[in-house]
Image (cartoon, rainbow, N blue to C red):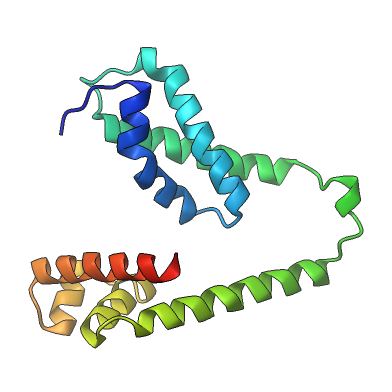
Length: 163
């Protein structure tokens, strides 16, 4: 797919895939939104250096997104806690993380229940057990193409359930 590489078309075309990429890697919703904005600010700043003969626009924006997320985590490691958070104990932080994880897992479990058995099996084999689509096809007894389609459909249903 060839697109006109302008700030507007970049944002319209790649906003959702970039948001999903960031969302899968960053827990804090405020940080996710900030990173999404930062990706497109970085892209606009580098637009004059974009060379379509070296990479497709999607590849280029993916690299910017990846680097923005990496920079975010590097910065997280270097910054000390603000003084108002120094009294926040490790126990409280762990309790909040456990609660968030339990809520997230509960929501995911409920969403998985909305899938058919075959779709649920494919999602579990692909993402929990880390099997390739070909390995999953052999296990489930369907074609590779059918695994890819069922995975796509299942993820779409999960996304709707979790929103």
